[in-house]
Image (cartoon, rainbow, N blue to C red):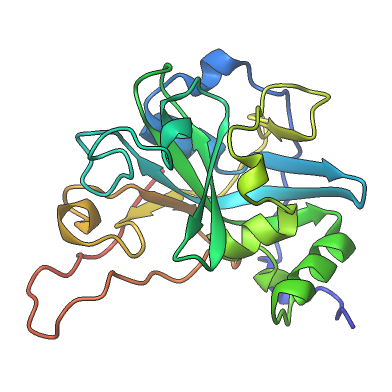
Length: 242
């Protein structure tokens, strides 16, 4: 049975900003870090015969192309990452370790691979449906945990490999993204190393490309890539910007 959402799931003085317009494809045709910052506070909606679920994004990660050692596109185009090379404003969905799905938004013009991973968010519409989907996939104990992490977010939205290449720019489509109303305030943005990325791609000084909204309890916990206890290249700490 689903418990009632706790008042502690959000700061007492927080206000959920409402959605604005559906961005045109050109809005996505920008560098991934720029799009990533603008995706925070945006709303992703998945429509299905079961109903609609909307998630307000609170955490994302940016990934580049061949010049980004943490990117799937670092070694060029493959069958798996082909969606990263497609036109911007589409989804790149992949299966991680054969266990769960991760949902990314493609950026930059076609042929220049880049994407933003949707890491976490708050379910603001269709919570009952999101809860049922999460219970079918595993254990969920609070509204805060529904979409707290990329795999959970994908489950809440009902997205799997069938959504790979889906278009986010169609207002009447089964998937759409709406920007937050820029007239409403939201918490500052924090940045830090990407979760589970090793080597230079996971170095906070070189790639502080994980972005999240501070004061948001739906943001997932940071976990570095596995390293030997003798390793000296662990990512350094996070920084905060306005």
